[in-house]
Length: 395
Image 1 (tube, rainbow, N blue to C red):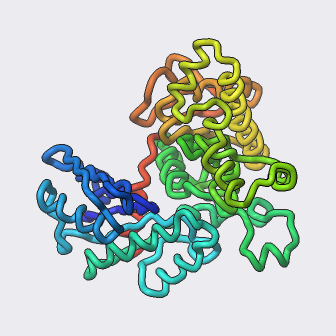
Image 2 (image 1 turned 45 degrees about the vertical axis):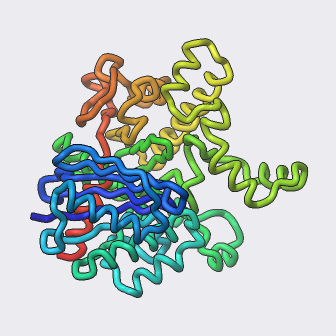
């Protein structure tokens, strides 16, 4: 058995999943939410069904103790001798980590030192690691980084055209994010098609509340849409994606916006929420069907941005064999899949409406027979990828 407890720790949450890295099965999962607030919420799903609790969860240490109690009470039993490792999702690995790392004091310190590049994520990741190491002191803990898969990008893709010394001093470059998903999906694409990974040129479209695209040549990322932070790139649920930086100067000078207000605007009040008033694509589609032109324009902006990145990566790759949709919207929204690639037929890109219909929970081809570019839907599984990398790191 290769059982790995996968932990994704946020500033006020702990998501977890017990994964058999050999079979790929999820044996249990859950989430601790509203950590630090007056009343927290805990949900555990295991072999005996789902259990939901509401009680104060003052910190991550308390959250981890609750998780252990639920495994003890609701199953499956979670003993150190039954675990191969605890795998931790870490958002920012900077230019330090190009793969998974077994966590010791030095690694934990480096993750903490990278917090200025991911202030909303790395401190929470550190808190989760400390709590988990306290709960499981005698087994290996492994950090798996969202940025690691993108470390193969060439300088032309990751370098911003700003003063070189300023960039060097403040570690400003494109790091990307969602790398664990892009790695899993690009490998799963080759496996599903029965083709060698090294022979495939793939564009991966990870479309969820957070959204990113990547260009993958022979299994290695050569470009990705997210940048120094996960703000750059595609239109997202609440994030703006690409924007002229001078917009921020204008808002500061003319509107009196502070740095914190600009951060709040672009990260939490923009994207589909800012354009349409909705973050759930089902609500967006309902509004469009009712004739809301404002929401239709928002959706057109969403499609326009995706098409732009598909065209950009087509040019960079030179040849595209596969385009793969994944994540919550990519797997479940047939309207988005169809319209995001509409008009690209001259590039050999087509979507078959019948094959594309409905939610897709298993790998599936949605392009017509004989299409020059195969279009797929591949459900992502970041927890399994973290589990596998954790096992590999300690092997």
